[in-house]
Figure 1 (cartoon, rainbow, N blue to C red):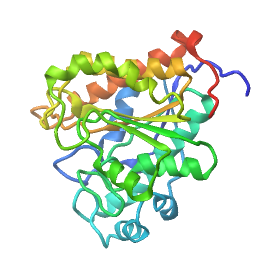
Figure 2 (tube, rainbow, N blue to C red):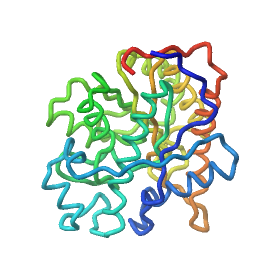
Figure 3 (cartoon, rainbow, N blue to C red):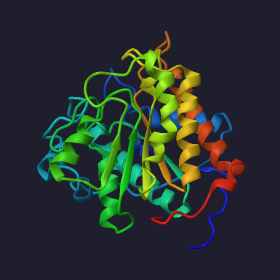
Figure 4 (cartoon, rainbow, N blue to C red):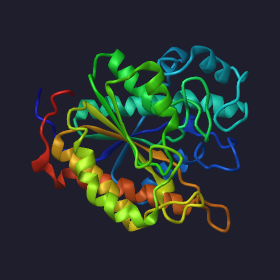
Length: 304
């Protein structure tokens, strides 16, 4: 394997087709990829926006019942927002395609890539919910395995809520090679008093993925203490969370692909600036870690 070169920017896999503005008034997740990328660009963060190909139904069906996939895409079955809106269905091959393309790129560069997508971990084998329709995390893991790129995949899900859909698919399909961690393993959510203790344990938690070929990291914005769904970390704690994940993964030589997750705060005018701030901090931490500041830690990863 040739030496891994230092990154000068963070690859971001984005296409406008990922955006579905009419998904639901209750959640900004389907519409925010475009706002997030525009915010990163306007702030001068070192990102490299790249295109990718959308996924076909057969690839989505690696992790889902084929009838469910086809039913959603043909508007015969409701999506994870509980409706059958065409714009949502049209966006799904692109949001999931972004995650897979970012994972391929992270494996190729040995370090990191970002998919500015959301709406994955509540999607189970044959149903959606919680603003999630197809589980791009498991779809990505299974596609990478089918392509022979990986033997073992890690999912570090630091959204506020438990990835019940991820757990459902893992159990249904017997995916013993898929390692999944979340601060909560059921409906009980972590509390603010637990945040510092969890952050102290986080380096050891990330290190448990050392034998994975790639780490899929959900950098959940709904974990913010100001989130209406009941977050548990401050802005400073979330930034430490993200920096820890990136630093430990970099030290291990473990490629990371991260995506947006959660985030329901709004301004009085209805904007999502509080959510953009969380995602901005994540990208800033990512860019600082992977822009050569920790170059002494990087080494080729055996599985990449």
